Image (cartoon, rainbow, N blue to C red):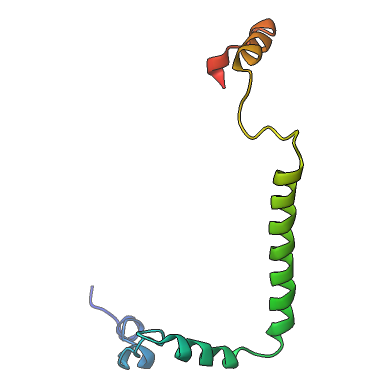
Length: 97
């Protein structure tokens, strides 16, 4: 019935939890202060950032070029009457989709 000594020790706050909460690092920083924080990025991560940045740029370029150049892409539904006849011919209902 009574709490054992081990159980009381298990629910004590840890030393880390007893310290005051640190101030938020990002609170009210100006742009120049944020740019200075970029120097703290480890140099080993810079090539990774370059590769990821290049991959994102290539993906955006490829997608936008594909949408602009390829005129056969159906970006919206066209000829809904023909679609309904196709579904009716195969015994499907247009509302089931």
